[in-house]
Image 1: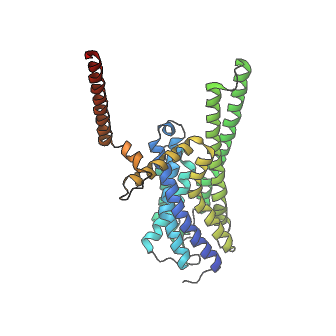
Image 2 (image 1 turned 180 degrees about the vertical axis):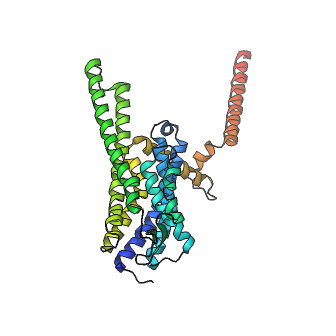
Image 3 (image 1 turned 135 degrees about the vertical axis):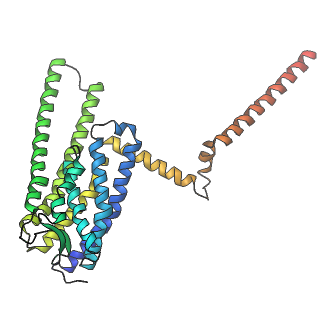
Amino acid sequence: MGTSIYPDYATIFAAVCASIFTVVGVLGNAITIIALLKCPKLRSHATTAFVLSLCISDLLLCSMSLPLQAIRYTWQKWTLGEALCHVFPVILYGNVAVSLLSMLLFVWLVAFSLLIPPLLGIWGKMGLDEMTFSCTILPDEAGHSPKKVFFLVGFLIPCIVIIISYTCIYWTVRRQRLRLRSHSGLPVGGPNGHREREDSRLTTMMLTIFCCFLLCFLPLMLVNVFDNEVNYPVAHVLASIMCWASGVINPFIYAASNRNYRVAYTKLFRRLIFWSDYVSPMPSKSMAPSRISKDPSVQIQKDVSKEAKDGDNTCAIDIENKSKDTI
């Protein structure tokens, strides 16, 4: 292992967290994407495009960035080559920008285009920080670094805009709802009430996602900008772990705050369980009747047998009736 400014317990904890987040995040976001594509009711929501973009971003973070983080903290040095070292911060910081700006058109292009200057060495550069064994954005030969500008443009300003927008939406919707109820005199229940509750749940889900995003990413942004010399190494490790958690928690937020997502997850799991049972070479006796009833050929044979049996019974009754008439 390399010489590290981080305590051993901090690097071990970070490696374990990165490994766990990789598995949980890949599974959770992949299942959410499949559920969104399979469930027509979820596809009809206005928030589906945002959630789908966020899931893809988190899936890339968990499948591409976190495994590299686990390797980096395990060996306490960068062992994956210079080319991957240049790509690594693009994936990490690009996904941060996508998560915040995913409600804008062409956001993926804009988010990753912001990282072209340091990638080409025009303004700052991508490289390995030997002290923290981290591939990140470094100052160029003139000592210039775009980190503070990226923090301002890619994090702080979007956060302020989102907070103001959510506040305006909340107060506008609240005023309109109170005004409508006072003039119409309609009861809270019924189709309109159901629609209001559904919209309220979706708004709560989006607000929860944003608050969790702030909680996860703000510490990392602050330590990277204001503690660039890494005077508090443990704070950097903890901030990184909180950043990784952002790619894992969103599927749990969807399930906890919206019933439609819970229903979609349940249906998807049931399909997966049924499929695994159906293709199993050694079916259990308890599952055999349900499988037989779902096989069309077997069902046809049962129907034909039933019809033949009913026909025989009918013939026997006719013969018996004729015998009685003859007597």
